Length: 246
Image (cartoon, rainbow, N blue to C red; front, top):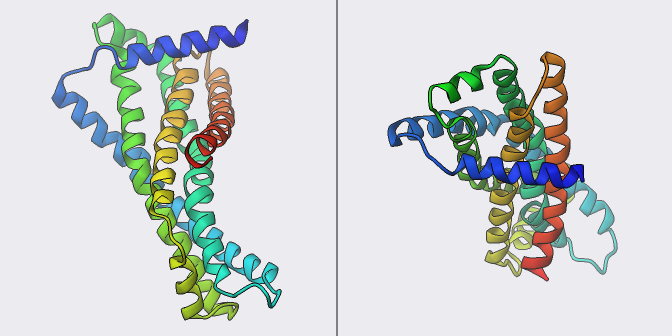
């Protein structure tokens, strides 16, 4: 029954979040502020992880494709499909769930235990709409950019490290990443990125919003937000894969 209680309270919070928006000027400035904090602030870690993931996939694929019956350009195909279909949308979202999710839960949880949210509500401000809605929209708007950024750097990292290690030539790798390319795979990855962004922004916000106690409970809410959003990302990864690619 506790599970249904949390589901119900979560959907009620989402309804309040998107129920009564603030003034357009305040709403716009809040979104740009959150894009800067959540999106642009994550470019560095996304870049580093994507480059090294692409490099590792390239080297491992070349090692596993040592059979002479398997063409070398299959390394490029493996890097391209792995980055586009799974690593860029799903793995990057899991990492952002840890970075962004914990930040959202901690920020909102701290505002709850210090009674700042109560002060907003006393002033007649829709606290979920003012605090949570810009974070969710900013995450959903910037997530496709991060996914594309990750795809590009992952493939580039695989290309550079593949050439430096000598496991693949320039011609073979370029042939692989262009061989039977399906543009829908990119659309599929972007859809997953937007859905995952909604999850890792809203679930930690829920746990932060209903924090009770002090600083210790804020830390626990942050941990719960990251764990539950990560589990939901994996679950929806399976669901979306079944719906869009089956």
